[in-house]
Structures are given as structure tokens and as C-alpha cells.
Image 1 (cartoon, rainbow, N blue to C red):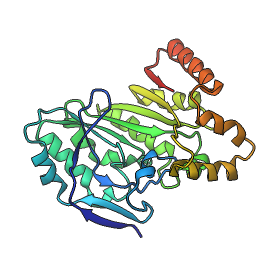
Image 2 (image 1 turned 90 degrees about the vertical axis):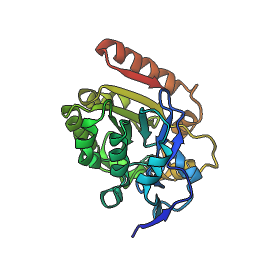
Image 3 (image 1 turned 180 degrees about the horizontal axis):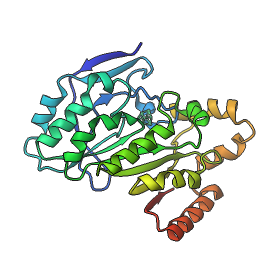
Amino acid sequence: MMNIKPYDNRPVLNPCTLEGRNYQVDPYIGCEHYCYYCYALNQAETDWSKEILIHEDIASQLESELEGIPPQTIYMGWQTDPYQPCEAEYRQTRQVIELLLKKGFSASILTKSDLVLRDTDLLQKMNTAGVSASVAFNDNRTRRLFEAYTVDNEKRIEALRQLKEAGVRTGALLCPVIPYITDAIKLIDMLAPCTDVIWIYGLSINDRSDQNWLNMQKILSREFPDLLEQIEPAIFSKEHFYWAQLRDDLVTLKNDRQLNLNIRL
Ligand code: SF4
């Protein structure tokens, strides 16, 4: 059973280093999705399989932090998923979006869950709200190996379809591309009809002692022993020929089909 503990001694609004975004809000501290490759696991304060922290009275704290800041788009989904399972009950994300809407701000959201559909009514009323889903695996069996607690790809894609139909801007984050496992071209075929833009990033691990690499190494050795020798050098070098070939293939696809692809491999 997940322990949800209040934590009130830190800002809700934080600087954001993403292009075009000044601020970000993580409504939770920790992420129940517990994707084994997640870079945020390297700085996790609690065991995310057991404990998630929440800001107490998130709306009033954020309201005072937003004072004097001109309305703009706030990013959500930086270190945690704003629609992880506990959001169904705790509604931290919904409270943030309600407040942003009331104050004339907008939200740009990244999630792996279709729970975001619950807030379509609010997102529709914002000026430039956008929702992106991150997807990295071609089938749910493989997905469960690397992210056991997320929802099926089909649900994420259906959520994007419904949001797009409702007039919300949609995107996909094809991330992380895991060399020799993720078929990026096939995923783009699935994602293109329900998204306005697709961002593509490869799996990036800084150090072999990082928690996310230790997790990945365990899964790869158990499930893909014959591929491990090929996968590991590609994960640790973006100069590897795997990435060069994939970049070429994606540029060709982008030009041939006139797709809005942002290739960040
Ligand atoms: S959903 Fe995102 S933040 Fe949460 S564990 Fe997965 S990669 Fe990390």
C-alpha cells in the first residue's frame, strides 16, 4: 500500500530549463510509475514503490508563489508524472490546473497516463494548453519490463486522440529510445495521427553507478542477454553507429512524410 505523506517545506513553482518555459510545477515528489530507466530515480528522496510526498495545500502555496509573475505556460511533468495513480484521489494536479486557469496561465503537461482526460474541461478553457504522452515501447509486454506500473500504450494514444478532438494541442515524447529494442519508426506511425508534434530522445545514462543504469542492466541481462553486448555501448555513446543510422532514417521519414519531428538523438 502506497504511503502518501504531506511535505510542506519547499516551493511548488520552480525554474524550468526547457526551451520557451520559465517555470515548472511538480505536483508530487516521487512517482508511482517507477519506470526503471527514469533519471529522477538517481536523486529520489524516498522509495517510490512505497512512499510519495505531496505539498500540503498546494493551491494556496502556488497562488502566493505566482504573485507578480505574468501569465504564461507552466510546464508539468519534469521529475514526476502529474497523473500518476494517486492523482485520482489526491487531485493535486487538478488543483494546480484550476488555479492556473483562474489566474490566466496555461499548462504544458507530460504524462504516461490517460487520467489526464479527466481534466479536459479545464485544459480546453486555457489559451494554449498542451498535453504530450511519452511512449517508448512497441508492445505492452516489453513496456511492462521497463515500466511495470504505467498504463498501456493504447490508452495513452486514445487519450491523445480524444484531447486533440477536444481542441487541446497534443504531442508525443518518444523517449527513451532504447537501442535495438525501441522501433522508433513504427511508434511514429502510431503517434503521428493524434499528435501535432513528436519529440524523439534516446536513452541517456550518465554513469554506470547510477540507479537507473543498475536497474536497466538487470533487466537487459535477464531479458535480452544476446543483445546486451550491442545495446550497452550504444547507450553510453551518442556517437555509436546505431544513433547515426537512426538519425538518418528519421530525417528521411520527416522529409518524405512532412512530419513535425524534433529529433534530439
Ligand atoms: S513517469 Fe516519468 S517521472 Fe515517473 S517514473 Fe516514469 S519516467 Fe520517471
